[in-house]
Length: 113
Image (tube, rainbow, N blue to C red; front, side, top):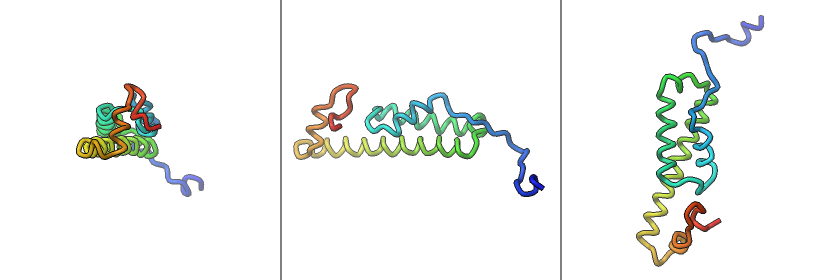
């Protein structure tokens, strides 16, 4: 009776697995200004490559969705930073962000927080 109420799928093995760089990718995606643009884009690309691989196809639905969501957050954050840099470059003397970019310390972000 239990097997009839809960379907059992035998056709695919699922692993609770993430790419080796997932912890760093998650840290960058959830901590604004934790990583530079290049690292975010590289991590997002690596997560997408992992999901296209044979090992990535074995992820269960929740792990797959988490990996996909982190990659999307990295891309969105990267695009936002690109947009901010472009805007500041075009309006350098007129923006608050110009001061923040000027006060940025290596490894400490923009000096905004």
